[in-house]
Image 1 (cartoon, rainbow, N blue to C red):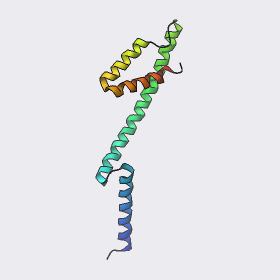
Image 2: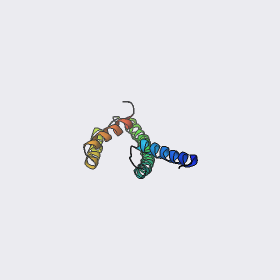
Image 3: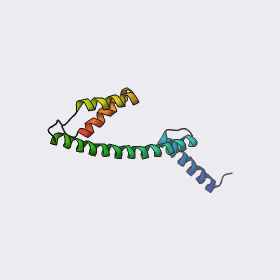
Image 4: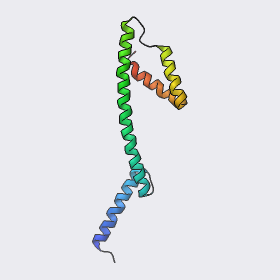
Length: 110
């Protein structure tokens, strides 16, 4: 026979396992642990990527100010094509979309 304490402990363990697997979509606690750890790493990478994008935006603003201040245009299309090619070569077609988004963010309001 189970005691009330054993039943409560088993229920708590099942609830914790179900919560972890529900949150991750995993079917085992071990897989849920792997997913949770990997997601923490992804979240940290995303924070770094966001910081780098913000830094890129600030540097692009400096370049635009210098170009416009010297009488040039706000956007240098040949440079943008280089960037698109670089991302496409490295990441394939989705890289082109990513580069377009970065360029849009870094141009500011046109």
